Length: 154
Image 1 (cartoon, helix red, strand yellow):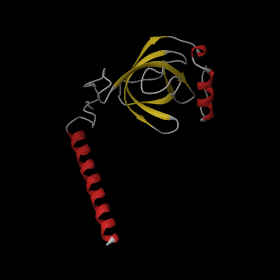
Image 2 (cartoon, rainbow, N blue to C red):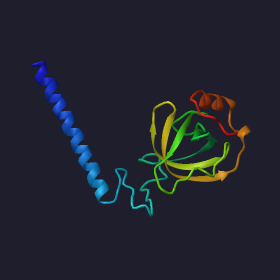
Image 3 (cartoon, one colour):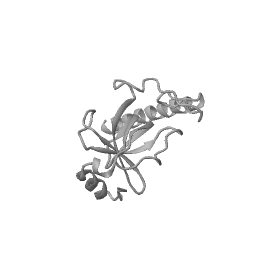
Image 4 (cartoon, one colour):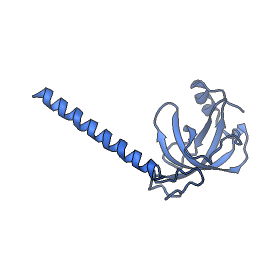
């Protein structure tokens, strides 16, 4: 009896994964991704980019530039505590992290945070609000980022 239950559970899980894969494939075929954004390479339409109750959230914080990544430092006003950080990755062709320096204050539109170490955050847009300097970021943030194997550019 237990073997039949395990087999049924595995078949059910496989069916759910198959249905999810089919829905993702259909979304890509009609020009949208699974977050209802265009993927035509020319424009990105965010349906609720300035809300915190939908799939997207607008946040303001500082950045730390490293040898191979740009980190967002939460200011404590959102879901994450002050000086908590996440590595940003682009979720749009229009997002470029090259012009930002450690200490800069930015506004981002993000959708998802991967709870790994270090955390990772999908960014749909980023805008410079104010140039900053390395002294604007708490030294403990640098220590934590460097302990993960990154070289901070101050």
